[in-house]
Length: 305
Image (cartoon, rainbow, N blue to C red):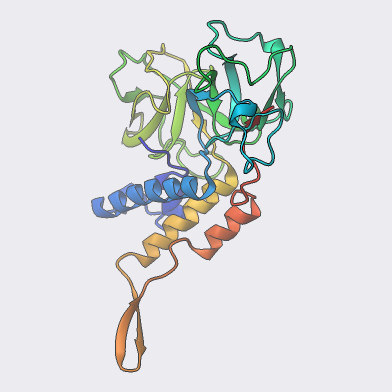
C-alpha cells in the first residue's frame, strides 16, 4: 500500500467534517482516501524523499578513477551515492561483493547520533573503490531508509496493546482495547491512513490501517514497506508512526485544497471566448511549507565517503 502522510480523521478535521464517519458518504470517504495517496506520492516526487521508514537492502557501484566523470565535481574519495531516501538506521554494510559484512567499528555515520543519516565514512582501512569481479552493485547497505528527524525518540507513539494474539500472517484484523478513545489532540487513537507497528523492534512488521471495524477492532494491510508479516502475542504494544510535522501539514493542506476544488473549474472569458482556467497543480501554501522546511532544496543527497 502506498504511503499516506496523514489520516482520514485528520483530513476530516482539516476540511471541517467533525460529525464523524457516519456523516461521511462512501463517495467522499473514497475521494479523501485516494486524495491522501495522491498528494503523498506527489510530495515524494517533488522532494525525492520518502517520509516513512522502509526496510531494504540497497546496492551501490564501486567507483574508481576509471569511472570518474567531469560532471561529478563533488566526488569525495572517488565515490558519491545519491538515493531517494536518507538512512534512519544501518543493519549491515558489505563491500565489493564480500560474503561477510563489515564490523560496526569499520564505519561511521554522519551526522553522529542524529537522523536522518546523510553520509557514511569508512574508517578501518577499507575503501569504496574496492570490488571483486564487477564494480556494478558491488556494495550492499541494509537498513532502515527514510526521512524523519529525531526518529528514535519522536517517530513512534505507543497507543494501545493487543487484546488477542495475531493468529497467522494473513489475518488483517487487529484487536485492541479501544479504537475510538481520543488522543491528546482530540482525535481517535486509530484512523485509516496510519502506519503502525506491533512490537518494539524498529524493523518489525509495518502495517497500514485501512478500515475501522468497531470500537475495539481495525484492519490493516500486512508486511508494508519491506517488512515481513509476523504473529505477535497478546498484550504486545501497538505503536503509531508520527510523520515529519511539516510533511503531514503539507499533505493535509493539499487534500483540503483538492476537496474544496472538487469538480470545480474556473472559467475565463477573453474577447468573447470562454476557456477553462485550471488552478496550479501544487497549491502555493503547500510549496511554501516544503520550501521553508528545506525539502525542495536538494542539497541533502545521501553519500558515502
